[in-house]
Image (cartoon, rainbow, N blue to C red; front, side, top):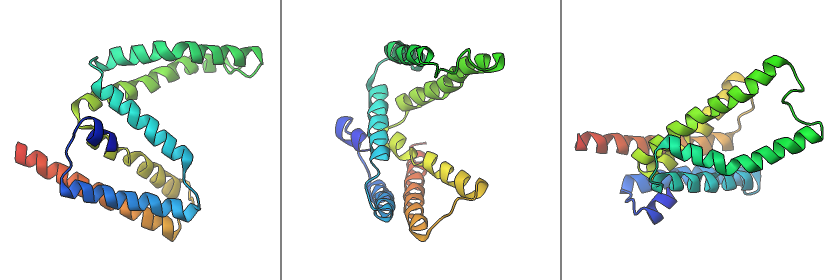
Length: 182
């Protein structure tokens, strides 16, 4: 959201700013509860935000962009897989024939959401794409607590309540703005 505001001059309304502040409070509550900054989560957020910004400003369609990304990463990934194979740690051709078929298909399963993300990033404001990134952790939370019985503390409840409130405000504002335009 910050990248969209800074680099693409996307304007935020008061309700959007309020929703971002409320959701940020939720993130800070969680960081306070755990006693340290969640560095891995912050690095992931920054790198994925930069990826979203790059996909937004790149003047190529989703499939071409994914092809370029794949070609750029192929030497690194290929080298790593070669290393794993040499050291006996690789999974390809060391398990069953079924696994050897499923491993390449995992790339297709990964590529489809990336293509959809790139197509959506071109059509939506980066601020909206950034705010929607809160949906994935929310779905992970629901899966962890409801399906796997993970413990859920009061600070976590306060954190998620802030995040969900921010999401609800932002979504309400977006829906209202869409209705006014249509």
